[in-house]
Length: 605
Image (cartoon, rainbow, N blue to C red; front, side, top):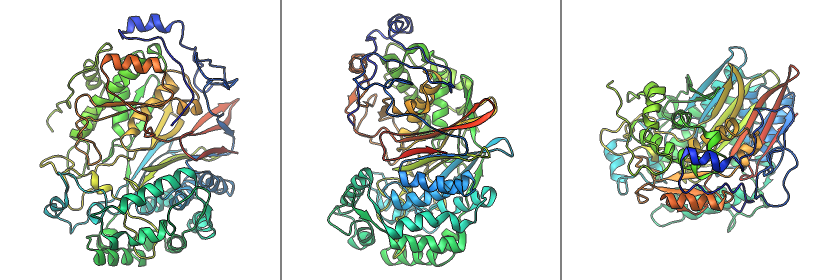
């Protein structure tokens, strides 16, 4: 992605904290306090013409402010659907469900009711952060032996029935609505049904990824009968084009059934029967019993403190605590003095990522099947020990997981209502548009999340029937002094913890507002020794560090001089949204932000 040039910090070839302080003293901008009432101008050297007069000079646009509610998502019509629900008196949960249902039609390349869902929210009545894990299990009739027989080079295939686990989204919607909904359940589906029946012009990013996904499904080795429904639903013409009208009447009918019959219509009624019949026809394993047995679970978030901001994560079978592990290590360094977009700052962050992801590969899995040492992984003592392995002046040539004591494509959005509830929700079909499988006449694709099981014998994430796979999708939430502050997320497979940590560092250490924190160029490290189906085992060594266009060229040169193997910008730096809670003279104010890398928008009223 071509972006404007950002701060070109003084080169730090001999990258040490002492030299960094001296080099940065003449270039680092003075950061304003968190949530400034009036945005101060933050000028950064070497930025192209057209800089903004307030806030970060490189920002693409302003945050959007409102007193009654806010929503930010990766599609403008999804955001509008949420605002409509809020204006009708709906809760933030109501609006989140409406946005997610709308995105299942608007952005089928990223999400839908064939996938899983995770959310964290601020419950204003209980004054705490609450989490829900809507993660489905593998079919009980699919054995490990059968899965091994379908693997390629020890990795499950990305497409086809063998990687389909029970979709958890609709049940998670239902349980959220039962506890926190204000409007009637059926009313939440009205915007999505209207969009799907009436048709909506395809956005540029959705059209691009739809074409890419359909090309992948057409490759040799994938059964024509398996993907015929996907082609009929999403590729009726020769290719999708931005601006052309897209409709999905099958999905509209499915939504009407769910609106009328609730979660049981999906997991126990005609929809479940159709899914079972479809798998029986193409040769799969999902049954009505698998679907009927599914239940989402309320999950107590794990949290850590980062310089006065408490960052929350869902631990159960996700990579959420990787964000906390990275931040715990980085808190031992002065990231503010290390500078914004400097070699030192990016080096420290990438090294923390490498260490955290070794633990991610070794320990993260379904806690119902394995004992996960979460408390130890996010402890201060463990972080201090791991941080000692990070040298400011060189790359650690070999990293490994810590020794425990005995014992991606996604949609993200954030919503807040006038009563103080804030929802951070992430939902995904995983790789591409999902498995390539669209059950007869239902208009949605089933996910391929089961590809993230490992086949390594004895590993906590080894495939088993009735088990939840390791999950990449993670919502983000941060509080300050026991009060809600930031509902946020960064989409994109293994980029998510890396992106979340970068957003928090941009906000806390560099004082950027919600929009600028997302606009800032990102880094993405690939190639830890991970045991997940999505990882590229061919990278090797210390991995590949990709720098987004916009990272200063002098910074890139200094990182290369340190020995980092740099890769080109590939657009894989995630897509971000956030809603921040502020107070102005005792009044509630929300600030919404959305990502320049996506088609979306943040709105507030």
